[in-house]
Image (cartoon, rainbow, N blue to C red; front, side, top):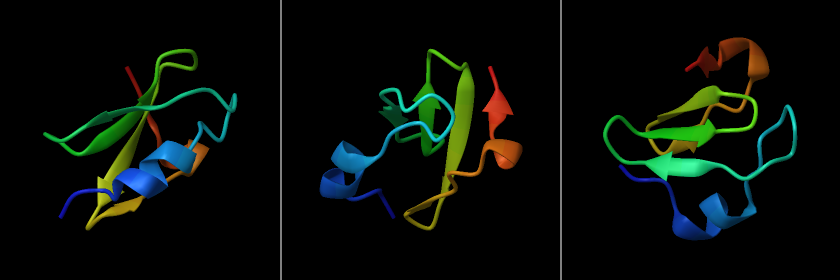
Length: 55
């Protein structure tokens, strides 16, 4: 299941409020300012800073 494009357009990084880049494989949202990657599980973004992955 892919993340809805309308939802993607409204999401920002919860840490810095910056723009997020979307990737389909694996399905993630990435903030290049904070260097955090947020998982998308079953079409639902997990936007919790504590669960984000550093990259």
